[in-house]
Image (cartoon, rainbow, N blue to C red; front, side, top):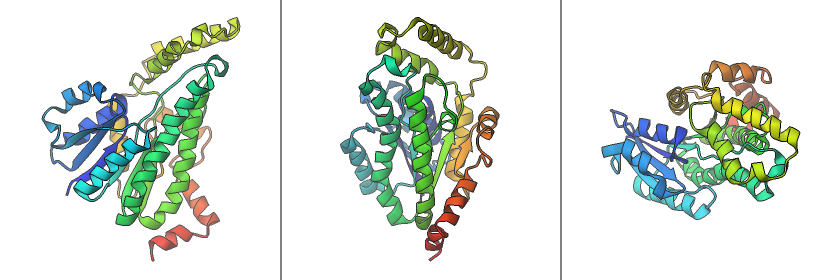
Length: 295
């Protein structure tokens, strides 16, 4: 039986690439619900999916900030297939800007999509995974969820929050045989870095009245990242890691997608797999959830 996979944020980047990769699997091991917040932006997905559309790839509207759209897709999947085997929370938005230059609403949107969107999608999928006593939840985090970087305070905060949410769930869901993993790339060859600056410009960051020194530093920093693409990790390499998290017999908690990400993580983490964190929480809770899984 093919695995039923729900992916958020399939307009571009990792979500698009993963949906195509799984949906075009020669053995047809996956049925993919590739979701987008705006269906009028599905052209790239449709073009790359080709004959897989409505065969192994099902394109649906899902805005992670709108509960009714999440519920609608989850209900459809359950009614059609009876289960959801894998949830990949990929939807996300970047924003690179000094904190004082944009409105609270602009900054909150990052947290609404990156963190609350992940939370809400899990909230609707989880009862079904608990009932079936199986499932994989894979949350796209970032090395920015381990070490923060300049001018990305809300993006980094959202990824730190995703890490914290994921660890809490990873422990408690052991009792239901549901595995939770996070994927932590460093800088990959998507349009994320350029999009982060582009969004800030559209929101008026350069007209915000920031002081001259901040403007100089911000301009230098963002220009450096937009033009230094030699170290960007190919998207296909990240997709391989996501699939590994989906298929590993014993998935680990944290998947770092490159040597660069591992080296950065080692600055802060002793065990970069994250399994020591889960073991520590299991010890703290007297192995309650492991015992429940075996009962």
